[in-house]
Amino acid sequence: MIVAAAVVPHPPLLLPGVTGGPVPEVDRLRLACSAAVAWASGSADSVVVVGGADRTRTWPNLEPMRAGFVGDAETGDRLPLSLSAVRTLLADGVRAEWRSIAVSAPAAEAVALGRQLAAGPRATALVVAGDGSARRGPKAPGYEDERARPFDAAVTAALAAADVASLADLDPVLADELLVHGRAAWQVMAAACAGGAWTAEVDYADDPFGVYYLVARWSRR
Image 1 (spheres, rainbow, N blue to C red):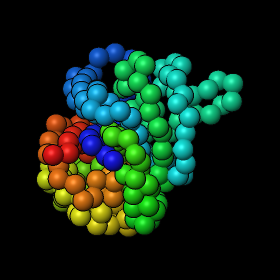
Image 2 (image 1 turned 60 degrees about the vertical axis):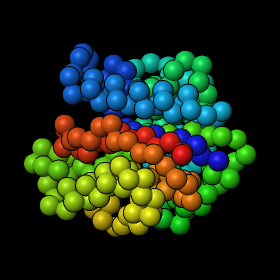
Image 3 (image 1 turned 90 degrees about the horizontal axis):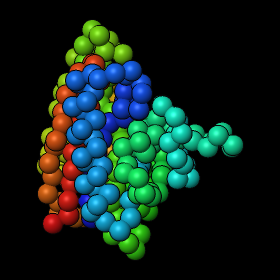
């Protein structure tokens, strides 16, 4: 059963050494993400991390090896960016189950994975890594799209209210057009947390680099 859930983004800037020095916007984001991940990992007997990637699969518990890289030097196995970001935020000694979901996965696939995670016998904390739209202005990676802000506002409202139905109903086509990398992972969370009563907090919501980043926490009541 899922007893706690944390949502964090996964920009490359969160990886150690990527910025080359202090960047106030990144430091503020990293602090919020670190706090949410620490809160989640301390809330349950086990931790499952879910993040978007190019395919759906289970990953081994790989170790951070050098700046910007999490993987196994011998096998070449490497965590996708979404999982690498969370891996570098986890405190030493914390082990987790690592699952990626294809960014373009249909909602039904996300629901199936979420239900599978919820069916586990242990009290489990879920950490979900996903970015919002990347089309929030002329300097954004995808330039500007007037639909981006309403989409992100709807996701923020859903996370603030622990509204699993609204997360489950996110439009995959629109999310893809807005370069949203969190839609499928959020829908895994929605399915995993369905049927529960939750207390929700949004700790961070901003787009310092034209991509919308959210940090939120849900705790089961």
